[in-house]
Length: 422
Image (tube, rainbow, N blue to C red; front, side):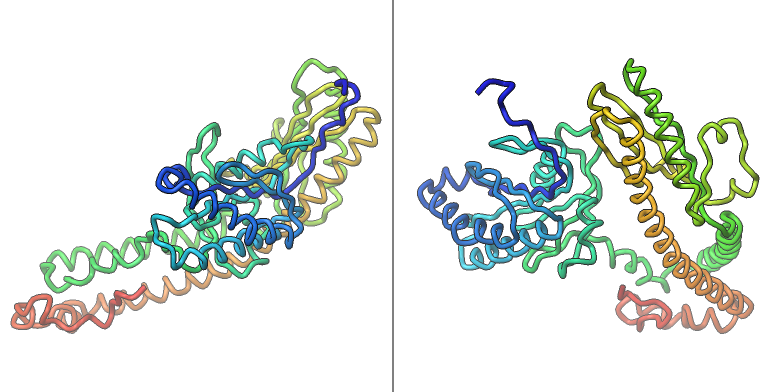
């Protein structure tokens, strides 16, 4: 078949599941026949049927793993959980050094599909997640977490960011909390041990610490409450729409980016819960003082290509520079007006959902902060009352008399004001 007659590549959004066997080389070296038999049994009895049940597609089997794609992130994660739970159940009676345990990574992204394989950053990230995951576990990317957080029964734990091969930025990921997997290490109860020998601290040093903590607490609470009530005034957030940059020498892209920017400003301005500012006005300083106290965001992007163009868009927190959302759109530049309207409509719809979700999250967080502020202020009030009588009864309750203090740690009853339980 000539290159002209070959079928075109397909591009689509998919959930990608990458998996391989942990320690496969060692298993093959120790017992090749048993390892191959166990691999085929896992495929035939567990992996392939479970993927089919969740309407996934096995792209390929490798020597020690497989690659599959699903229509939704929820199906991919639920499928991975069922596979791992069944394999872990079957591994229970097997000696640890002979267990066939899979690492699995799941990502959602755009893929390019040909007749034999799938390609793209979405696949690469899934493979990197699988490489840093734990044997018998499932690692998922941030965008998968956002889609499945409230749709699966298993818990999810953020594992931080990790620098992985062939990726410029560190990779942030979560692990699915499956039964039988060891918990990750948390420094949860260790700080409480600092209070176990409180009676052994010299009295003059304790007084100094109490005074310091009291004044720092008062100042901190005042600053916190002032910042919380005055840093951001009530009202909708502001969004600065910067003109989409053109990459390359295509003159038509310049006009397309200007028209797309104008369409976005016009469409977003109709949202009563959003104050829209053009990037040009922001650069020239045309911004009311009240706007500067709102929560501020920036929408920016690029346009590049020739006959086929690629439009990218990013939503950025103006205060921190954190990228909150990103999208990519490929279009044939045949009808610029139609393409501008279509892309701007998709971006506006996505941003509307994103702002609504952020508003809900901020409302929930605001209630938590206010209740926490009240608790801190109440605690400081009690400390102030205690400070008045500190030379008398408080000293007696904290330290006891010299005879009790000589008993040491084992002879002292635990302080009722301090708990080692987290």
